[in-house]
Structures are given as C-alpha cells and as structure tokens.
Length: 162
Image (tube, rainbow, N blue to C red; front, top):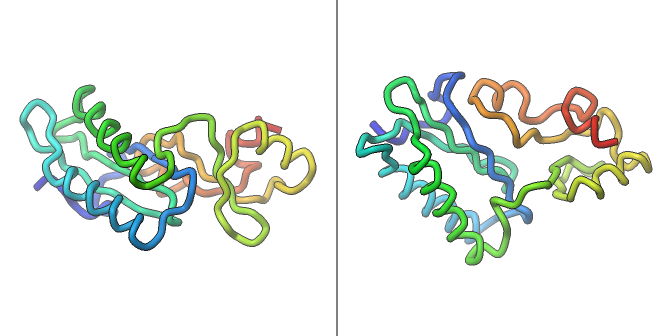
C-alpha cells in the first residue's frame, strides 16, 4: 500500500515541504501533481515500497510524507525524490528546491515568497507584523506540519529575521 491520503499518515511520519517560488495553478498545477503522484505510487527504498502521501496547499506548497514505521526512506530514495522535483522545475517555470526563501501572507491574504533579507526589510518597515501569517517549511513531521506549518510570525523562527 504505497500511496495513501496524506491525512492518514501518522503524526510521526517524516515530511519534506517544497515551496514553489511562484504560485502554480491550472495546467502547471496538474503537471506537477500528475508527475509527483505517479512517482510516489512507485516510491521504494531498497526495493521495499514506501507508505507515503502528499499534500498540496495554497498553489505553492508540496508536502511529501512517509510513514517510516514499516519502511523508512533511505538516502538514495530521498535523493530520487529531489531529482524528480528538480527535473520538473524547468517545465513548471519555478523553483521548488531553492533555499533561503521565506513564505508569508500579505495584507490581502496572498502568499508571498521572498528572500530572507527582503522579509527582514519588510518586517522592519511594518509591512509584515508579528501577527502576519508565515509558513514554516522546516517542519519535519506530519504532526508538526498539521500543528504549526502556518502560524503568526511572532510564534515562529521567522521572528529572528527582524
């Protein structure tokens, strides 16, 4: 039973969060999810199928989770996931794997992606406040993803950027 609905993964399932630099909608969203779903359906570690699921949020965040209670993801299997996503970036016209980015909701509720320096500058100017919603792409378990992926910047590591 390799691929399961994401919400059935246990709280201790390992997750990886990939944020798209630009929002994906319509055909681009379909391309991403079709390729990812097909690949996850056959995802294995050392020949053993991985029980995994994915979530897609805000047209930006792909979250892949693995229930490691039966079979854990290996370094090679994780590298393969990153390789698949890297291969999709050009056709999607956005980055999924770039580091150093911060995602937050602006005053209109739209998700924005900026580098850390821009985020800090906007926070210092008051454009982003302590109650502004931010997305913690560093969460590593399904439980943390469910509990604290989106929260006020004052309650997140993002507060350190100001």
